[in-house]
Image (cartoon, rainbow, N blue to C red; front, side, top):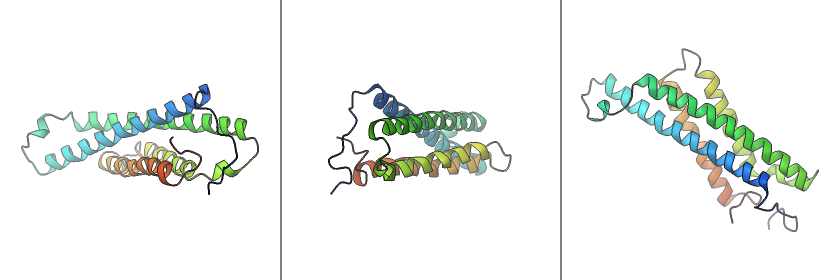
Amino acid sequence: MPENEGRPLPTASSVWTSLHVSTALGSYGAFAIAFVSSVLYLIAQRQLKDHAAAAMLGLTPSLETVARITRRSIAAGVALLAGGLVVGYLQARHVYGIEHWWRNDPKIYLTTFTLAAYIAILILSSRPTFKGRRTALASAACFLLVMATFWASVFWSDFHRFH
């Protein structure tokens, strides 16, 4: 039985709901770009390390360019996700008042953890010991958290369920 049964849900036509959803989806898009560029970085670096004259090596941008795309995509995703979280939190406080049931939603927890992980990558990527391969590996791994938030919406969440 859903925890929020009998409680009103915000209308989908709300401007704040639209802003919340669009910024969250925009951040997921930015994190997807970071994931793809991270995978490209790892492939290109492996080919360079193995001195392979692979066909793909000539098609990819330089490692520095791909690393810059990854960092910028993560920065854009962090800004959008933080904005989406703030708007969603303020809207939920406005709609539900002081009730606390909506704060225990698994998607809220996973999204907050995802934001913290990407902020950590962003901060660590400025350190010389974390640049390049480590940033790419961390970005690719954190994309699993993004996918987990979608999974949480479908299977666990009563509050963020897509209709």
